[in-house]
Image (tube, rainbow, N blue to C red):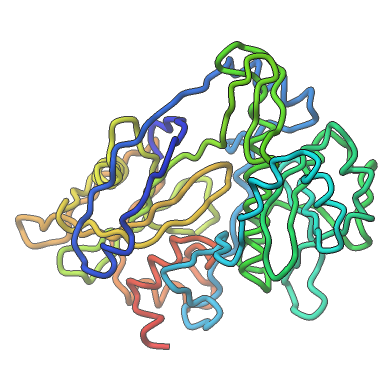
Length: 402
């Protein structure tokens, strides 16, 4: 992805999906109100290191990927356009204002229906699934199991929401060493991305994503951008941070990123690419971060051209769905689009940016089917945890044929 501009969302960003999916015409997104926060990188790293948090540098951590789609005809891989993985539509957050009162918050954590999600340096707590081979399941703890952690002032406490009469909280225990955390037997901390698609309940993925995203954000924001103080503390049930010196408040930053399946003008080929750090044979749709001053549609056009040299027809851009992607803090906004038809009637020529991409190709449906069905599975695509999977499956027409 090119020029990753790190900017803060303020206010509501997206209200276009239903119109476009229902009536199939382009709706242009409103302008974004951008605020910036940029203390020196060295200071941020040092602060997080002192707090027991390993700075997330994805150039060093790209061995972690969501599982690959197993086979094209695997019914378990089918996915609707929404809700996407890492979403939890059933989660209710109505109590957040009430729990903004510190006394109410502390009392609520002690109640019988409270469940706790531990996050340690960006990793969630799992165990092997009792009945489904190769699957994991999250470990949700009761107050009696985490009482000492919940009372620890260095542990960040966050209200996640309520679902099925259970009230979920997250505890970020990154300041502690593993030996200081009473992990239940069989439990282990693992990157949520590694567990993507191999959890029995999709709602669990949404709960864990929310807990992870908030935890990583809390640990990454150490200084007040208004007065420079390092005296920031969680506030409003862990949904924000507030400076104890100047009282300025800060909410989690979300980085908007488009992801798009571009098809040829005839609709028979899809444009897929790969990065050098990806697993061998992995191809996916193109994606990139939105820059200051851009609409989402403009980002689609620019990113596709920068990464492949292929021009997108602006009138063909359609919203598909969106997905929370807390790795570390993105909102993936998915689109479909068509390439401008080449003058000679052939597939548009590809001219890749070698600094961005290892390879970009046009794939027919038959290419994808054969690549995934091959004995050695020479081609792989992201698994169902990624909205890229839903885009490719929608284009392949797999869901309609199952």
